[in-house]
Length: 107
Image 1 (cartoon, rainbow, N blue to C red):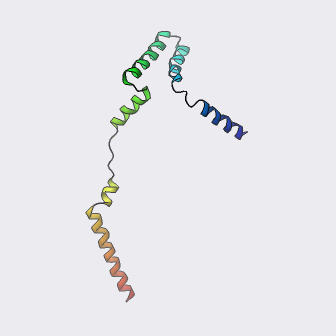
Image 2: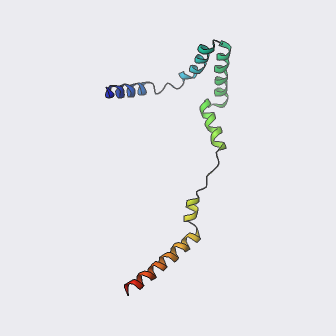
């Protein structure tokens, strides 16, 4: 039973994978069915089409661009710490101290 569901799911996924553009009408169709207001559905579809034709991007691409601009840039503190001169000196002094202890214990 699980294999049938898996095969059916993969088949539907492969067949419906390129259905991105026709689903643009899905939102306004749902709006029309729930509210019965054709003006609201037409305005929704028209504004989406106008924004897509003006910017050359879909609504989701525009949202991703806006969201990525507002994200703060994270600094890689770990990389800066590992490449700093202070860290190098600390590790070098610890190695020298360990070498001294090993030499003392071998005598």
